[in-house]
Image (cartoon, rainbow, N blue to C red; front, side):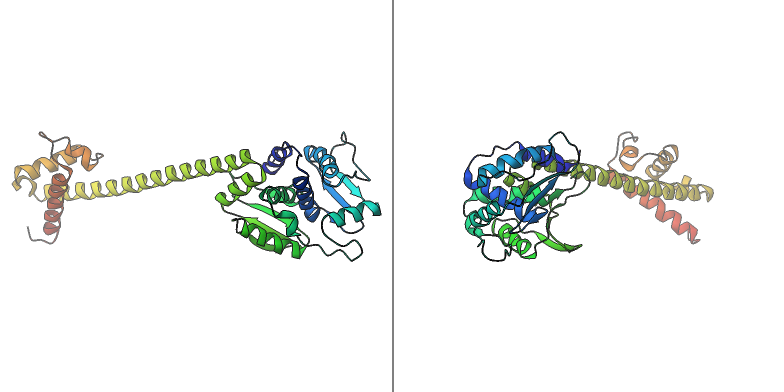
Amino acid sequence: MSFSYETKNELCRLPVQKLCCARAEAYGILLYCSTFSSTEVRIVTENPNFSARLPKLFHRAFGLRFDRQPDPDQPGKQVFQMTERQKMDHIVNLLGYDPRQNLVLHINFALLEDACCRASFLRGIFFAGGSITDPLKRYHLELTTSHLQVSRELGVLLRESGYPPKSVTRNGSFVTYFKQSDQIEDFLTLIGAPVAAMNVMTAKMEKDLRNSVNRRLNCDSANLDKAVLAAQEQLEAIRRLQEAGVLETLPEKLRQTASLRLQNPELTLSELAEQFDPPVTKSCLNHRLRRLLKLAGTHAKGDV
């Protein structure tokens, strides 16, 4: 079951109550469904929960029943259709269009003055033309329609509501989309899907934690590589001093440092510093090892 499917199932559990909100939700569905013209409404879905919601929603919003309804026991695509002229004129008139004129679709903002109606309208749009990617894979929510003017006006509505979207044209359709997790969370919460919003938030936290762990591991690995290279350089320097007979002539502290490094080639500076009796600081040990490196370098030039 996809994340979109689960999200729409959550939205379907919301009750159909206030007339204004039911009409706003149905309006959003109509603007983003398969067909909405002055002569036909055609809504296609494969979600049985949405299929069960539609008749109740349209009866509450317009007092009408679909002319064609699918068999609820039939799986696959389910088609709802309305073509009766009187019903179509009634819907067009209630949504603020003139039934006598050619229907040019746009958003009638007068129907969306209340915040509850705007949320219901956006929920309807998501039902009919929305999809959301599993947030564990990536963040992407989009709303797709075949009507350019509707898409443009939706962008205005979302910006005014505090959710600035992006838009793109794809295969003749007009897509409004979000790619930021916080915007997707806020949008889902607004339309009535707080569980889906929480799942997006949880996925983001998991990804952030995983990335943090990976960065830490990469950092630790890089530091380990540096420590190994440094230890190898120190061992080579000490061996050069040994071979040249210089090591035995050095002060006791440097001889002790060289001896402990030869005995413990795998230890970090902090670990090696604890091997001294009494222990020395990491800074002190680092200073001694640098002196050994410098002496070995001087010897390599023939100056010792």
